[in-house]
Image (cartoon, rainbow, N blue to C red; front, side, top):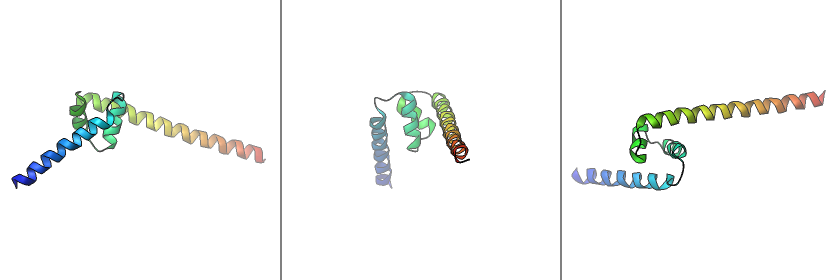
Length: 90
């Protein structure tokens, strides 16, 4: 049982090192986004980046808000194209 616990601890360290390496040199918001997409919880992201979980949560809310605005704009652009196409057909 101790051996499997030791292996799990070592794997956790490797995963953390890989995560830190993957986001190194990027802006904090981008780091948070990437780590969240990789499945890390806000508390884990905060520990990895040396910040607070509240900072991570605020960044995630902003990221989600930006994503929903982008999605809405893309939908509006498609609607505009369809309407223009329909106007040209008449």
